[in-house]
Image (cartoon, rainbow, N blue to C red; front, side, top):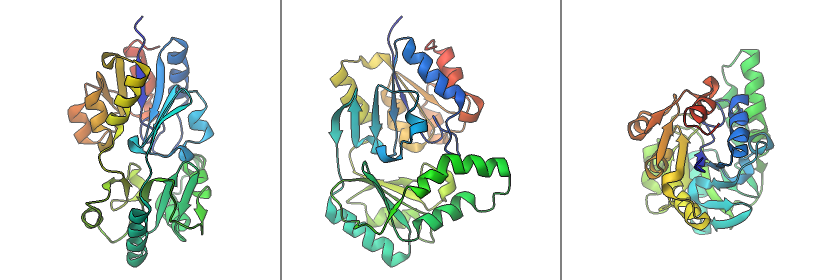
Length: 278
């Protein structure tokens, strides 16, 4: 049996749209690793957002912050931070335009004053089904509660910045920070159409995977990746087998080698089975 290296996006892939890990995905990761394969998380989240439920199955490493942080078997191979002057520009712009945001670091998530309130509006607003509300609270409620409010935002350990839906278009924000950040739509759709993520230019999930497999001496032809969003395009193009989830963005479906079901319909487990990982 050829040992494979599998890279899993988190939001919309390893967790469902409500932020919860389906039991079938958890069990598939455990079984694949028991069969001798290596499984890695490869996410836009910072490590502070990788809750115990997400990490519980066990992983051989983590790529976080959209490629700005790479860890293999407990060893940190890369950790890029946003320059403080770029953080100052972002925070000043958001304050002037009434945009709520949070700064992502491995040490925690540092939010603007009304970011918890705005997140609860976006995530829970209009939801009346008690079962859905309970799952949202389980998957994303802890994320909101973890935000640190009132801390000095001008930190040296910020990996990435997320901003929340407002009347300011994402195109306007992208233009404002064209020389400082890569700006993409938020990978959690319920955050709203003008919400987004700002990461360090020139790095992405594929560059991080390349660094990791070179360090670990993993042949590229033994790599598999799973994703659902536009920020997974480079990753799926780089690996030997790129798998898009059933709920994936149309642009990702175009570059994928295979398509599986979405998270709630056991997409990870079914694909692991079809590829012989379990």
